[in-house]
Picture 1 (cartoon, rainbow, N blue to C red):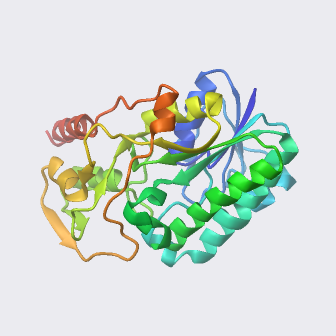
Picture 2: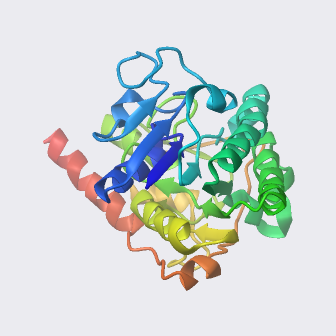
Picture 3: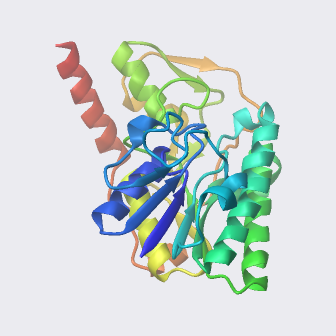
Length: 303
């Protein structure tokens, strides 16, 4: 079976590619390396668009809008993870949101139709923010929610098998640690290692359901195998209501600095995972244990 992963050199995509290759699949990664990295490459994966020209077939980076030009329609499953995926930053990056999440995703859908492939789309759990607040909060959340509705209709109109998964605050190996697109847990880990203060966006009481990437990948595999349709949430709900950002920062046992609230920041979210649980998926990894292991590692490094 041939599988295409858009965004396969990114955080979640690279972990998915690694699992798929280990399971014996023929895997291609299609990535523009906007947030992806050569450091995330996995042995056995065919990489398209490597910017140095050494790991793929093309020396010039392409985008999902160019998918027809660089790939043959030969895939059985397409995991479409290759979209713009930051909330607060999307106000400054609207052109990227439009190109990657609207134009690019339409091209990927056209390509899936040509392949007669099942498509697994990574929606945004911000769709399930309380009282539907996530939808209007940012260009990113608007693009993701409107995409889920379009994908459902497009696939039904064209008899394409599809499933839409929703990730909840993913953490784990290959996260981005520093810079504009750093993720929360990775940023906290890096700052603790460097002995820096942890910055928490006010008010700090905003809650999230942090989910380890291994659990995310397990859910994606199940959804691709047996899931059809919408609302396959993959989120860790073992702690009712999730953890507040301030609670997570306190787990690292570091000095904390509060910074002003940012545009687009939502206060809460709902876990919508009944359909994923029906497939047999439940989270296995603990955020507290993950942070404790990092704390032990930091102490060993400093000693």
